[in-house]
Length: 229
Image (cartoon, rainbow, N blue to C red):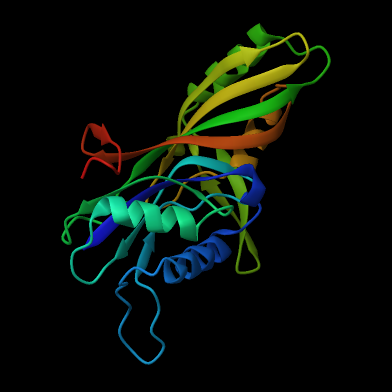
């Protein structure tokens, strides 16, 4: 069986990096007592396929991973075993069986929907912030500098910014921005890069924390959840 798991990475473990989270999930699967399938070779490991990586410090409410079981096991039993194995680590939302030949989650392009919770600087207004976000979306090119192999290179990240919208702007200076980001095999944009772009375009906003609310896969013009295999 190939099992797809929909889970949340809560605030308590949001500072675990992607590699460490993958290891924690592999250890949790071992603790589950389920008849796991392992990779072949001298150094066998739990066969697990992670979804899109979360940046360190980011909370994830719609995350996924796949793993494999020898034989057939009732999915209700799988869910119960995982809930026990991952208690106080991640929150298992649901599990289901998916076809062996289904494409891996990260082999497809995706739209990752984030809520950015921040603080507006003194003098910033909702109207001005909306105008700044709108101006960014009207740009044809947005270049960022990235360090790679000791060299600084410029990358055009405009295509990865799909939606920017003010969801909340309180007099107490609390701000919530919706940011939908394209993730492809060829690249994406980092949240800290997005924050810098917004500031460089004149908005006085400090990002406090980010919650990834939704993962949507792309196939042509169609968007769908990884759950809808």
